[in-house]
Every structure is written in C-alpha cells, then in structure tokens.
Image (cartoon, rainbow, N blue to C red; front, side, top):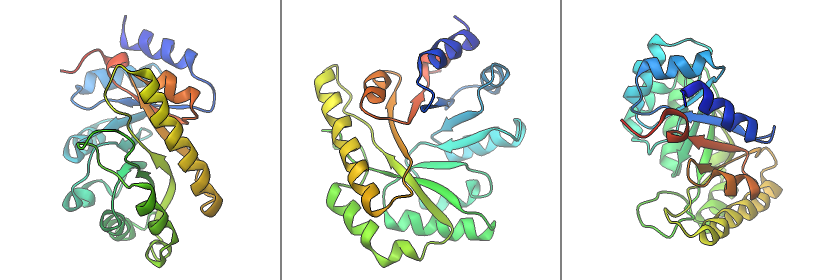
Length: 217
C-alpha cells in the first residue's frame, strides 16, 4: 500500500468530526509531499528543529502541529508558524509560548496534556493540577495563547480494556473542564495502535504515523 492508499483507507474510516494529524517525524520530505499530494494538510512533528526545517521548504498551507515534549528554550523557533501545540504540561511552558507568540503578534492554540497512563514516562497534568491551572489568574493573563482542548496518551499495552478506561477518564475530565472553560473543543487522543478505541470514547483528533508512512525510519 502506498502513502496515498493508506491515507485514503484511514480517512474513509473516520467520522467527519475527527481530524487526522499525520505524524511525519523522522520521515523524509518526499513522504510528506506524497501525503500532501493525496490531500493531507495537517502534520505532526516531535522535534522543533526538524519541524522548522521541513516547514521552510514545504507548502505554506500545511498546518504544523508540535506533538512532542517541548523544551522551553526552543519555543521561539516555531512561534511564528506552529498551528497547534499538543503537549503543554506546565504553566512555565504556557508562559513561554505566550511570550514568543506576542513577538509575532499571534495567538497560538494549545492543548493541555493530561497524564492518564500507568507509566512514569508520560508527561502531563493530573486532575488537581488542571483544576488549579484553569482557575488561576495566571492563565487569564496569557492573552497570546488559547487553550482549545486536552490531550492524553494511553498506556502502551495490549490490554484494550485498560486503554478504553484511560480514554474514558480523559473524556470525562474534558467534559468537566468544559463547564468552567467552555472554549474547549478538541480532545486529542489515539495513535496508530489505539485510535479506533479513542474515537469510540470521544476523541476529536488522532495522531497516526506508522499506519500512513510505514514503520519508523
């Protein structure tokens, strides 16, 4: 199957309200061009330098999503063009994004990352941190960022019941958070291995790499 065929098959299986982020990290420009020619416009990268290098040479109507863990000192390199930042896991990072967005006279959309997995390696807010952040005055002062939703990654496991439980937990937190933060519209959960469960549990945005581009280079 080609990249074009893979994309077509995935898109045909998605409900209309679910956005597909094609995870192009480590993939060459030619692969992204092939996906672009097949109509894909939203790509996700996990390293800011790599994303910026690609952004400079690829069509300007591509929406670049930063999906990896972010070092604050690198935010400045993507502030001019990034369309959505998925993994915001601290107030310090939000403040840095706000500062860099201001320099470009932009409001940068962000997702708050929630820790739902039973693994220590995943970053993110827990429910208490999230409540505190959303109620805080700090967040009201950040006029150059817009929190548009939540994001979370399930435990890396074959146990689909556990994955489903973690996604359910994130969806219920999303609904609860919307009561005080009605602007929330995006719930990013689900990757190549578990996006079907994520969609069943309410995801509006999935991140798929290997099922489009083949296994990692």
